[in-house]
Image (tube, rainbow, N blue to C red):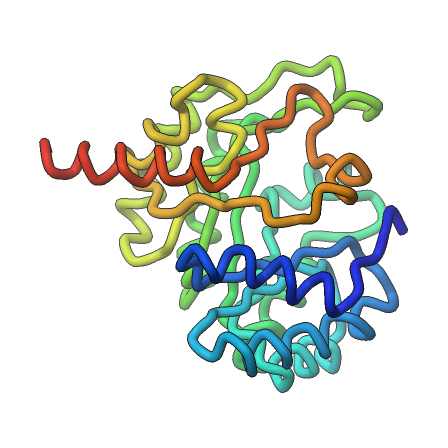
Length: 255
């Protein structure tokens, strides 16, 4: 693994957010076979020390037993994006898995009583408008789904797609707007790729259907060990998040 945080470190990081009135705590890992060893005690402590906090897990494709263990420990929701509704495109970019397996995991998540967060990527090389339309409908078909994201593709250095073109921001916003109309009750994040593609992109996102932002609470000593995007990665801190939220409120008041 890149690194493992202890349960103590996870709880301490959660307190950093909670002390600023952040009540939704996202615990994200890679597909670590030992993830329950630190996730379970961390979740139990967060629920004990911060009883009104909502815990969201994002730990990849797991078994029903593992999803149940997270639920029993106190987890509320689980994010598992299907990424693309096109089975061939999915297999191309995730050759070790299948879309069928991914969707089966999504159903298991809901079966054990966790709220499902899902979503897809906009602008994958080889993706068509028809694929995007099916992606939007996939979110509807997976209802009830309290959370869903539609984020533009960002090429990452050191991967096979590093020289591909990034997703188009304006097109992404159109997709988000349509997704919001079809799925009016889901929480949709103004994801950091919006900001990567345009300064102020997250603020723009709140004007077309996005309703949340994610703040990174990972301890500084671990941040360089994991970068979702190495190319000028945008890290959202508390001040940036406040700016987005305040701008969103101002936009709505002027609407």
